[in-house]
Amino acid sequence: MSGPQRHGGVLGIDVGGTKVALRAEAPGQPAYDRTFRWPRTADPAADLTVLAVEVDRLRDRWGPVDAVGVAMPATTDTGGTVTTWPGRPGWVGLDLTGALRRLFPDAATAVADDGDLAALAEARCAGADDVVYLGVGTGIGGGVVLAGRPVPGRSSAEIGHVVVALDGERCDCDRHGCLQSIASGPATLRRAAARRGGEVGFDDLRAGLDGREPWAVAAVEESCRALAAAVVSLGEILDPALAIVGGGFAAGLPGFVPLVAERARHAGRPGRPAPPVRPAALGGLSSLHGAVELARGLTGTPAPARPTPIA
Image (cartoon, rainbow, N blue to C red; front, side, top):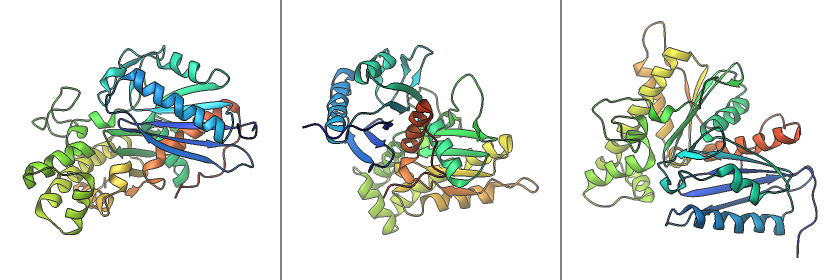
């Protein structure tokens, strides 16, 4: 049986390389939250089938939505076709705009870069107009907000592909030394596994850090140093009030963001200190909140003063 009809509902979808988060909101109604994992096949048809099942679940249990905002880590062209997504390469060539139109025929839809949306959500939450955001997860996302708006340009700020070590590891973009190739969750886990001499999952890494195991500490230290280098470089160019580090991987490791902050502070120079580094107030959900705000903007619904973090 379908749930009660709601009007003014908006849906945010945060699409990741391994999982997807949904949050629907409507005035006077409890929010709907759901997270699910993509199939391991990484086949776009299978992925969209799973997403369609989740959309049907949302409609059945919560109700319809008038607008949908999607946070994407992929690069799309002006027509909405995916051109690059190392996290799920099978999506290249997918008409994302058309797929969303079929999934939500009665709703307005929009897609934006997940890093840009995360940066906007975090900047608003922090009450700051000039912010750089670095999201550490399956990849490295990022965004720049200046004077309260995303930095203008022909495309999104690709902070994950800032080069921090010319002779560093090969990135999935096929270049060497990108921040993502060193500091992303998978890169950190690979390095930890190589030092430990055996497979390392996220829980293993966290336990290793808690126990101050050398293989865990060294792997995380290298990631934090690379992130600090990016923060310092962005500070030299943009002079933001804040650098915010978020993403599920960073949020799940106690001490991770403080270590980035410490390394960045020491790398500043006289007269031009590095911007202060803070953890994302929304944790690993910054992009999701940004996607909800994107959807809300399509309806003209006023945003609340500040987003409320989800427990």
